[in-house]
Image 1 (cartoon, rainbow, N blue to C red):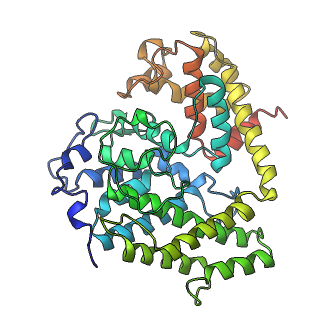
Image 2: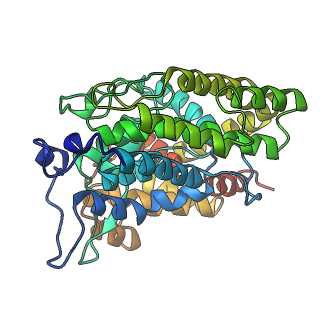
Image 3: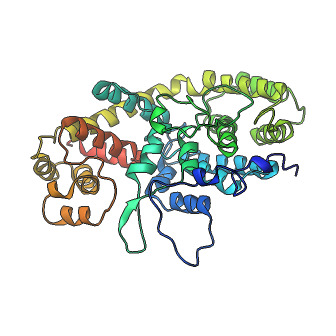
Amino acid sequence: MNKKFIDVAAGEQNPVWNKLTARKVELYSRSDDIRDAFERDYTRILHSNAYRRLKHKTQVFFNIDNDHICTRMEHVSHVESVSNTIASFLGLNTELTKAIAMGHDLGHAPFGHHGETILRKLSKEYFNESFWHEKNGLRFVDCVELLEDNYRVSKNLNLTYAVRDGIISHCGEVDENGLKPRTEFIDFKEFDSPGKFQPITWEGCVVKISDKIAYVGRDIEDAISLGFLGETQKSQLLKMARANDESVLNTTVIMHNLIIDICQNSSPEAGICLSEKYLNQLQEIKDFNYEFIYGNKRLDAFRRYSELVITEIFSTLLSAYDGKYSWKNLAEQKKYYPTLMSSFEKWLPKYCDVAIVPEGELKAIALEAENEKIFNMLETKEIFVQAIIDFISGMTDRFAIKSFEELLAY
């Protein structure tokens, strides 16, 4: 273990430790708690509903009945494993790395990147703003996800600055090497596009590159399993894989080699980086994946189906909007769409001013939540649209399909 980064790790010796561990409001504490700030963030994410739902969200391949196809939750576990190995070797804060990795994909919509594309279209149409999962992940941990405190009152997750930063800045689509953290503690509203700023910590940089290593390797395994790659592509892939190591037989060895290369070549001076030969190999494999996997025509039907499901759910929920009468409309439509309307009706009160929530069960739900009321008084159609987008982006594939099937009226 060379621990080259131990002096710049996000630990108590770090001069900006207090800023890295800062929260919007003070988090309740227990006198006998043995966890530090980042360990608490990790467990708060672990116990959130958004994390639980990752097990039924598409990574790349929509195959909810195949237990051996990678889901979003498995991908998150791979990123945690890769980043923890690198961070531990380099002497970085593994608890921070784990927390960022655990939370980095909480903002993903159902149906993977296809769902994200559809919500981006809707967001552009109604707000002239882009929807991207890193930004939505920050919105979820800041405003949407709730946990009960010691008194069973639901409150926002209230994570540390460093973990929130790692979530919104983790974009692994931008090709770069020698990652180094930025020095400014910015307002996250300045993030208006994926990858605009580097993470504030070295740990965030490690998660960012680990995300790419994890997905290019695991996606190939699924593509082979599902018959997406023919013998010609398999031969081409093996040739690329063996460019730097003749013993490579599978993607696990490729990932191992990339991890070791990062550990050997990274330094505070050079940044978190790969050697040129492994950087080229990673880029070559990534290009291969985009050509033969992500752009494969066999996914076209899934893309069209995803758009149909999400847009029809969106339109149905939006049809209930009528200012102060929206609650009444939601209640009336439950007889036609019991799953969709009931779940939305019970979810919405947590984020609205209690004064506008109808008496009875919905009012009780609202009173049990002391969180930021992001939809306030539901004053405008735009606020209602944002509520629908938040609701849909949190869905699992299974729940989206179940809700859509109610709309078929058979």
